[in-house]
Structures are given as structure tokens and as C-alpha cells.
Image (cartoon, rainbow, N blue to C red; front, side, top):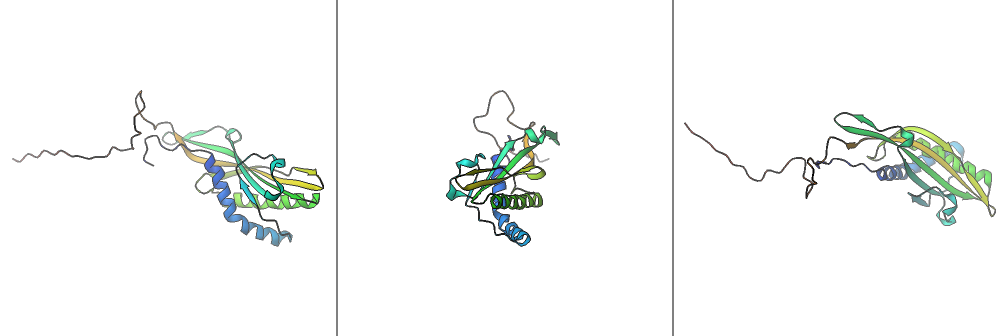
Length: 198
């Protein structure tokens, strides 16, 4: 990056990195879960970046996996380090929602999915160039029963740490914004040279 402003890290990269990591590794971890528990898990039908209101998913879109970067409140205060850099940690929620006619089986499938998701993110650590999993904060299994079907979920919350979020020493200098944001180093287009021979 050669802008004088420097990086402006956005937490949407954490969400997209989590989805990419889970899409890549989930088939491998579901095979392992099947070997350990003897249960074939249904394939995820929808991947999303939305809230975790379970009643909004249509039945044909379940199981659904949703990720949400919650903000830096749970991660503590941003930390200054190095030459003006800030490092910050975001809470990342990963929710798997499914539906099944049997409540016990619905919860069991959700719990096994939760274990696979936990395994991927804690063991892989990196989120496709969007931070690293620093800690595992919480896991829960909410459910609701309606019309002879149980909707169950597995919620995992992780702490994702990102270096070089922003640099307070960078940015345009002066009291007025530039017309065009200049690159880090000006481009040299012409050189004058004087030579004197004795």
C-alpha cells in the first residue's frame, strides 16, 4: 500500500474471511465429526452476513450459517504499538441454524456443528488475511419449538485480532485536504543536472 493515508481496516473483512475459511474447511471437519459421532450432518444451504434472528430463515434455506463481527467492545481497548499503529480485537459471532422434527436430534446436530466450527477457527487461526483468532469467548445452543419442528442453533463467539488497523502518524499533512490523495512518494518525471568540468 503506498497511499499516505495508509490502511483503513474494515470489520467486514473479518466476516468475509470467516465465511471463506469455514467454506474451505468445513467439509473436512464434518467428515471428522461423522467419524467421531457416526452422524451425517446436513449440508449448509445458505451462508450469510446478517443478524441472528432464527425465525426469519425460511425452511428451504436451512441449515444456515451466519457470521457477524460485533465490534471491539468485548476485545478490550485498541492498543497502540510500533510506529503509530493500532491493533484491535473484534468479537466474531458464528451462528449455525437448522430445523428438525425431533428436538433432541436438532440440538445434537447443532452441537456437533458447533464443535466443528470451533475446531476450524481455533485450529486454522487465520481468517484469509483478515485477522487471526486470538481466543474463544462463548458457545451456546438456543432453540425454539413451533408447529411440530424444532429450530436449533449453535452460537460460537471468538475474539479476532487485527494488526495495522490504522496509523495515527499517517495521513495528509496541512490544514486543507489534497485534491487528489498523493502516493507515499512523489513520482519523479524530470531531472535537471548541472555538471562543471575543471
